[in-house]
Image (cartoon, rainbow, N blue to C red):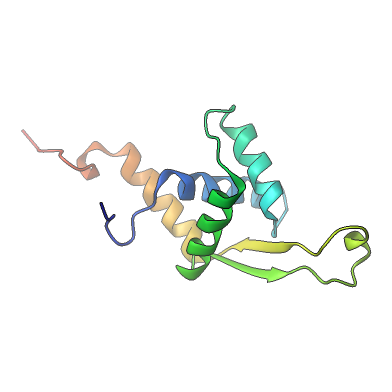
Length: 117
């Protein structure tokens, strides 16, 4: 079954929610592991995902313009002893998509199958 263009699936909503939480704490960029920890903390273990699932979703969201990314500078002192990370950033489109998805989720008149009396 295909989803409608412009709709978000639960993992994408969780990613955008976590990205906004990190942004509100002053972290403009985040890496996948950091994001996974934020999602786990925010959802009290109700939302589990494999790393492959997370990175496929991040890639899809970047292609859709909801996130942007760049590779961490390999010469950075933080990189010593580990490979560089891919750092993601929430875009304005991503923030708008999250706000729209929460608006739809909380307004019964916008939900599928709702019919006025």
